[in-house]
Amino acid sequence: MRWGSSALVPLALLALGCSDGPTSADRRDFAAVEAAIEGLSAAEGEDQGARLAELEALAVESPRAGAVRDLCVKAYRSFGEANGKLAIARGKTRDVESAVALARTMGPRDAGLPSGEAERLRGLQTDAVGALDGATRSLDQAESLVKACRERRADLRTFLGR
Image (cartoon, rainbow, N blue to C red):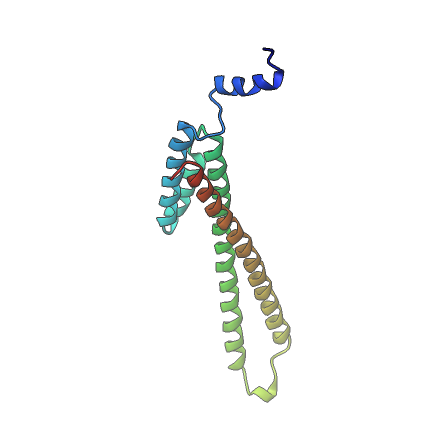
């Protein structure tokens, strides 16, 4: 019987320890990635940054577990950045509210605002709205990445028979 070159590829993969099924590295590395993600999910405040760095630095041999780790790092980093943008937008909104409240104390309503004050308030409002729009876009993108992270984790769990 003559074996074609296409028959040798699966044999070569088996000799290298590659297969279509889960490997011990897949199981071990995914368990470590899962534990790191669970720790990150439970973390609060500054501890989240440290936990994210731990997840990112986690050495894995399994390409499958590495892909999950990388996607989830991207998702959590994106979520953290989006929350930072949201905090900035909230601060800008508070600035507008304070400026409007101060402007109301400057005189009777029918007297109008002092010269330049209306323009300054419009500028603050435009800046706050722009910051809020940017934060909303970032949160939407982060939500998509977090969803993809969850789905990829579930897919690998299923693949591993968990």
